[in-house]
Image (cartoon, rainbow, N blue to C red; front, side, top):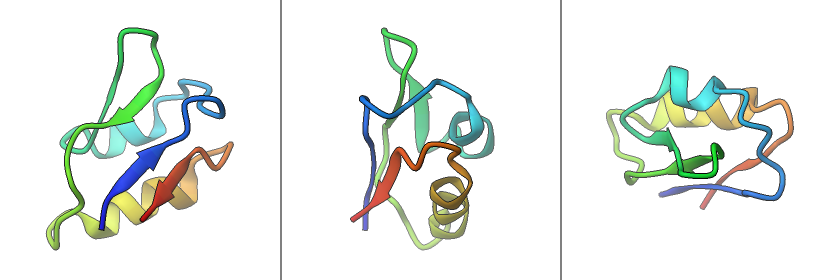
Amino acid sequence: MSAYVDQDLCISCGFCVGNAPEVFQFDDTGKAEAIAETTEENKDVVHECADGCPVDAIKEE
């Protein structure tokens, strides 16, 4: 499984970066991006980030 951030929807709120910095970071434009694959160890927090994103920009594939 992997996470993807829809750059067109992202409002740079920082929810995902703050909760899962091992998976998400801000890119050069200030939008969040996924930098790592979802693993067994972080899948719960990635799912939490997807559910908590205020604009539903995080997709899980």
